[in-house]
Length: 285
Image (tube, rainbow, N blue to C red; front, top):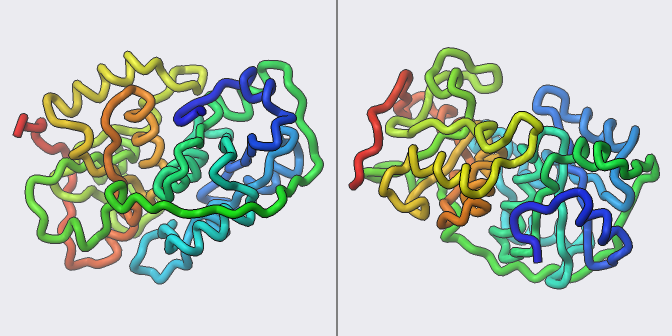
């Protein structure tokens, strides 16, 4: 079973395995149709396209963030429709270093399906390895997906309000965290007390994940002696925060929790506090 990452040669070796399911998760926050368009131009053979907005999100209300997590029953129905059951090894990929594919990876883990991995290096790694693409749209036959939700992996807005001494990790770029710019949400800044670790830090210059040892050292510099299981990870809308969670699990650290509503939900109410600039280093409490 692959539970974090898989490389292109390993995926290629399993292309004819009916219990391996490949999903193309390419997406563009500024052009929601771009990922599906790229899929139709060329994708990994057998891959089914998964649309972030249509397949992995609930309807937006204006107060629940840009990519709200669907209810458990709706998410389970999506996975059944995509042909996933307990025997299926899921492989998700994109063209952004796993930044979007990680949302599918996390969603499956949240519903108790650990056999899910992200293609390290994405479709670029597949092409660089000399493997073919196809333009044929793919569909998988429906299977029975039995959800086994893990509510301990999710944090809601209500959990955050009034809580003390939270270990919050903001996965957005440093500029957005500091409040110097905000291209997607109406308010700039971060949740008070959060520390910043941009999700792109997990990748090397070739767009592949750094080694588990390197990731572990990087996280330890941020967390100090704090247990990563205490951490609550967020981003702009609960997508790239999953990439930071993936990097922790791949590094052999305890899995943190995700605040799925993230900054876009938090900042939707002007009564909630916001912070800008740096926060002091974490204490060892």
